[in-house]
Image (cartoon, rainbow, N blue to C red; front, side, top):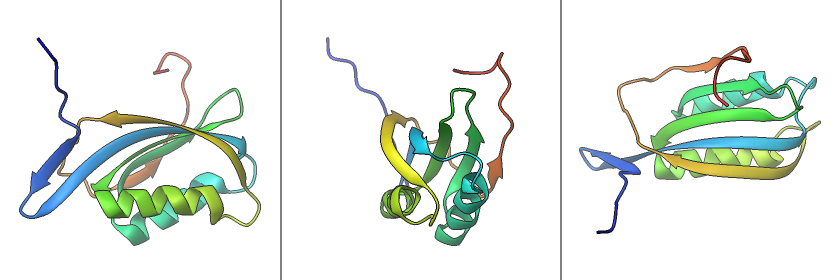
Length: 112
């Protein structure tokens, strides 16, 4: 029997999506997390961003599908000192309810 996973949540007429991204390239030491937070808040995207020990940045973003796509596009090309070479994307189940976007600290006993 096929298994289906919920990757969108519809609230009213707004379709929410949630994704986790790992961005690799020149994304640390240049204010990238602060840029991500500023852009997410301006676009109405909730979630978090944190540096990873191997040099990448991990982002979890939730919001209207178009806003989440626009946010990812801005992360790829909008920061003047960043160079995003690769983005690994994972669709997650939307949870809804949060409007915050935070900068988190990486802890080695947390995922991944």
